[in-house]
Image (cartoon, rainbow, N blue to C red; front, side, top):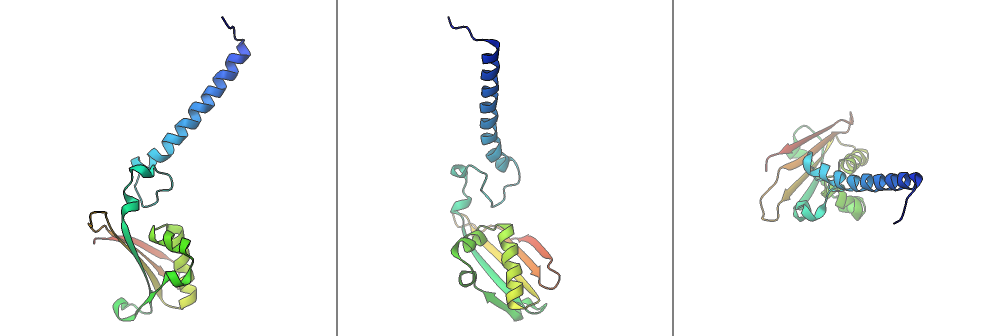
Length: 149
C-alpha cells in the first residue's frame, strides 16, 4: 500500500483542477457559438457540426456616386484589389475585413458611398438573407442590415 503525503495530495488536486479547467474551456468555447447568436464566423465552433462552410456565397461591392443607386452604381472587383485571403474573408463576412475594405474603397474611389452585398445559398439551393453593409465615405458611418432574399 502506497502512502501519499499531504503535500503530494495537494499537488495532485491542483494538477487535476487545472486539467478539468482546461477541458472545460475547450468545451465551453465552441458551445457558446451554438448557444449564442450563430453568425457566419465559425472560428470558435466545432466545424464538423456546421453547414456554414457548405453555403455558396457571392459578394458584390459597388461604388455609389449619388443617392440614385441604380443609375450611378459602379461595380468594384475585390479580386483585382486585394489578395486572395482578403477575398475569402470578405466572402465569409468578417465584419472587420468588410469595414476595412469599404474604407479603403472610399479612399480609392472618391465616391459618396460604397456598398457590400453578400448573398448565399444553402447546400440544397435555398437562398439565405442578404448581408448588406453601406459605408458613407464622407462621415465614415456604416449601416448594416439583412435583406430578405
